[in-house]
Image 1: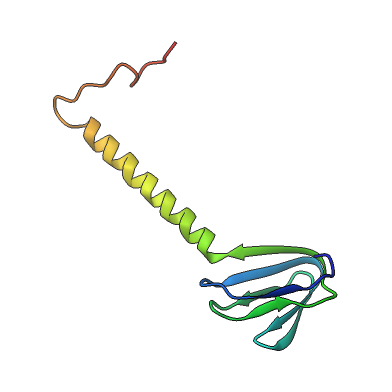
Image 2: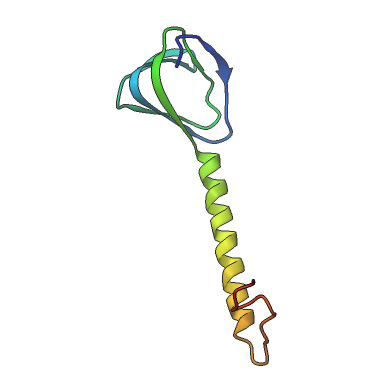
Length: 104
């Protein structure tokens, strides 16, 4: 945080703001909120919020959408892996030349 304000914004998903050091000065739905070191403030989905002048220090922003996307990608990869294993276990299945051997 560099003490400069950030314009008001809204997100479709909640956003967690973790202050590692320093102070985060927010305006949340028009109300002043101060978040200190070691504190977390969760902005609810759809809530108007802005960084007020004077914020300084280190801030970590956790967006729920990114987590949800990562979970969905991991689940899709697990399903694909399970399907590949199931296909390999079918009777009569033969491995192609690149399966089970080192390519040189």
